[in-house]
Length: 232
Image 1 (tube, rainbow, N blue to C red):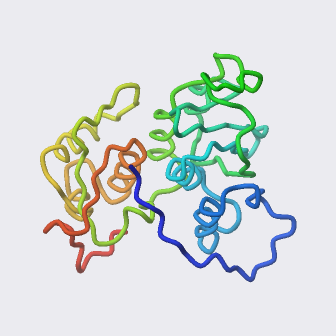
Image 2: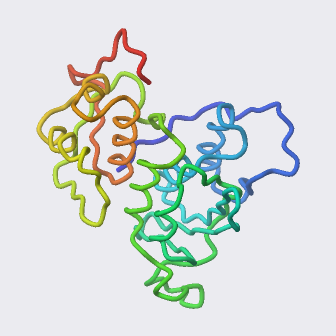
């Protein structure tokens, strides 16, 4: 299970007219979760932040994506079903420049996941694929190169028992780090110093593991200290 998002002050004096995302149609908790990024990133949110909020709040979302020189694309995410609906082959989307994708609009999903009782709102089978590869690829190659707020600060990390990498494109350089995190609990400073890692790669890996429900985050473990280190 994902930890509950800590409430934050969503007040923002900047005028936004019209609103870039239809946030008022979302649940209040999900809306507040998305708004907390505005002070840093502005109203155009990064895809990873929206995906993380979607998974935490288990609300199916339709996310309109844009990128320079590309037509808008609507991707629907079904976190409880661990499925994603994409009108183009997901492999083609993931093969592109994920860091260039920006969220244009966020709405409740219009489509339904396979198996829904609302059969009229289920699209063609070929439009649905597992959600895991999308979360993994956006975490490793998307625009966000820092820890999600739920993971930052004084913490130590370990890979959850039973975590599998099936269906995921795992760069060879990350495999030793994942194997090491299966055996020991480590903080970000330690992980950054491992061979082939570095600060950005370490933070991206932790985000990716978290969104696969594959990361244990401890605030009380003896390793949960990053005193004197500003790598994040």
